[in-house]
Length: 111
Length: 156
Image 1: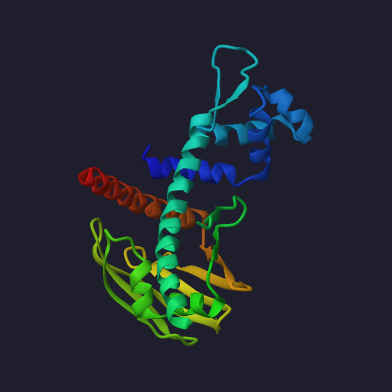
Image 2: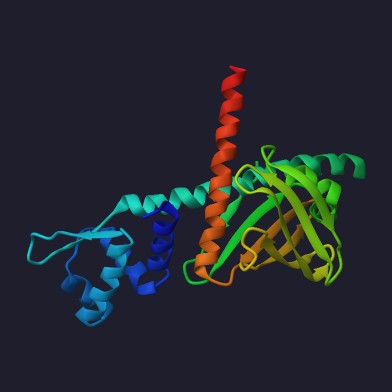
């Protein structure tokens, strides 16, 4: 998958509040579908559907071997989103730094 | 230096940007709406700005022509929808290579003594369009960072 397409999938996966809550829960440790279904008061198939979206986006992984198949948060995918946004932020930061220079001059002339 | 705050909410396809400037509001308004001044800060040095036109009235057009390494000669353009000088402005934003992705930029300047806070909201029609916008910015930003690194390396 191209980096931009993967990020689209990641952003889309994170657009849902339940999925964000699942991510938050998994940040504190691996959990099974049953563990996740309890606090969210959602049926297991609903949780499973959300997990599939998260898995496709590369945000979580599930072990094939274990019968309970605990979900694991893939920190790298989340980190990629953060890096992506940080670069975009720096673009604006540099733009505003140049604007600061222009403003300093205008202030001089305004006196 | 004042920090640039960027928020990309997951529930709405918008980009929120916040930044303080150590200048009074009328000067920030002037620097962001006067073509000769905008030319000096809007694009990084590695992108050549070919033209900058701003017809500052409701329904008036704005257009910034650039030459970029990946798109060649292209432009950003749009139309002013609201102008409440020196406080608030709403305009459409279109990047010529993707004319179907029309974003709406709302900028608010909050005056606090000799300082001014810019609150900018860039609203997109879809999450895909919003994320694409962030993505194109990322690529330009990376290139800029590389150019700057090269310049530093040459100076050593």
